[in-house]
Amino acid sequence: GAVVSQHPSWVICKSGTSVKIECRSLDFQATTMFWYRQFPKQSLMLMATSNEGSKATYEQGVEKDKFLINHASLTLSTLTVTSAHPEDSSFYICSASPPEGKADTQYFGPGTRLTVL
Amino acid sequence: AQKVTQAQTEISVVEKEDVTLDCVYETRDTTYYLFWYKQPPSGELVFLIRRNSFDEQNEISGRYSWNFQKSTSSFNFTITASQVVDSAVYFCALSVRGKSTFGDGTTLTVKP
Image (cartoon, rainbow over all chains, first blue to last red; front, side, top):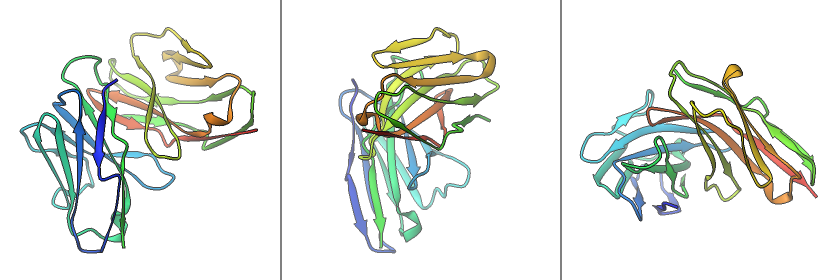
């Protein structure tokens, strides 16, 4: 099956710093990538939809200036958490959709656990 | 707006018991997709099944089976003869035009 990787798998940073998380589709080209956030014992919440070569579409309540998303190529999307604070500590998961194949299918990355001290 | 309800927050069974995880969804779209995912403690989502809105045929895959009923907007998941390795959080998800909505998840604990 299709493989999506995320880097780093976990990160600890100090409050006020910025953290970049990478999401890569390893064996297919992804025109659309999604970013989710999952707090402990909660569900996945869609943060934004990222299309290659265009601006990301953010869900209501997600600050686009705080969560910067760049989808510069068909295999890479990045999420940068700017000026991170402890409340941003969460599990961030990306997914990617291939341009062809089964509709609405998303391949999920393994997630990145962010801890802000 | 789309909504997915997994009424069972936690379920605990003893190994070899059968267990059914409920999922009820809401959407006004006629074309949609339903999914089940397993999330073990490691956190990585494991895809289990995808179903489109026009295919109500039930499916069986080994010990897993799914019952899709449009009349009740339900997409229930049954594990037969549960095993300890089945312990995880299970999410039901609804996708419309590429956008997914997840239920709150059901934590399944299978005791030996």
